Image (cartoon, rainbow, N blue to C red; front, side, top):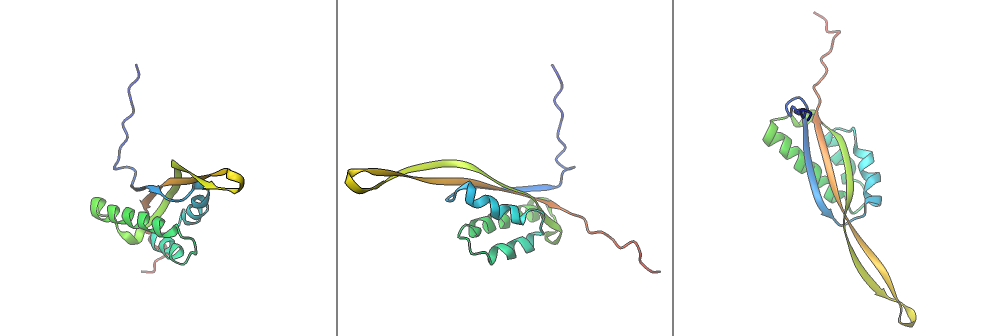
Length: 132
């Protein structure tokens, strides 16, 4: 019997927001999420706002929810937040059929995904070469 390690939540300054059942496949979401990882929150929201993809509206909603969580629950400064991680996973698949020629039917898979955004607060670097 080994003792379980306790995780100190105060040590890791991260905020999480999960958006379940987004009506898009993981394959379409992954490239969008990879572009925003490591960016500041306001820059990531701006980039998503000018994207031509339909699904960026739902990703923006998830980021805004994470920012609201950070501000209200942890009193973080919004200007210092960056997107530490952004990933998606598979959810349910609706199976539909489309009628085809000669009485046949072709399957249609309507895939759903879940998006997780993890933000972290970065302290501003003070200038070391300040003149006195």
